[in-house]
Length: 186
Image (cartoon, rainbow, N blue to C red; front, side, top):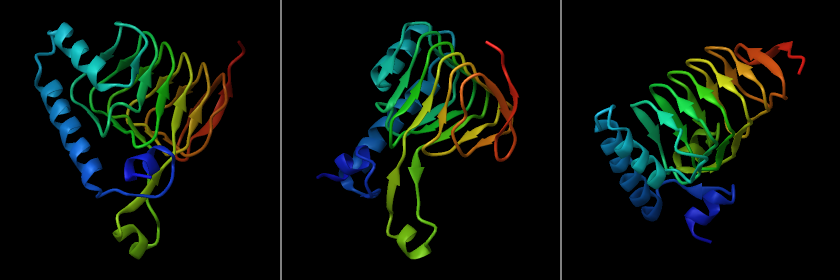
């Protein structure tokens, strides 16, 4: 297997593999161009996002600049998606976001995992776990979502939360670590 195939399969891979570094560089160049576009040029912004992301549910997508990601193609967003300023997605594994999701400013989604052992970490070997977010979800400002997390449908995650584990459908969850504070009656 190539290092990219290992990465996509969730296996340990070399993060300094030349193929991966080349792809990262090309994507980061594309992101730089996206972030430099005039915000009112919605057609150009949409064209870049369509080429960059793995799937877009419809043309009703807004990702305010600046936006950052690693590979782009592992990001799939549903219909009527909105992300505010400084949305950061480390998409070494798939990141799937449903329909009618709102992402507040300064939200980060991480899929990349690193060893807590310094020698292993310094080898630049890492692995990745997917993140999944359901439909009708609001992620408040400055939320961090860690690798392997699934967030259900009809969920609100309060501002500043750190989501470390799965959050079920129909709840409001807040805090560090993020905990359910209310169940919604649907």
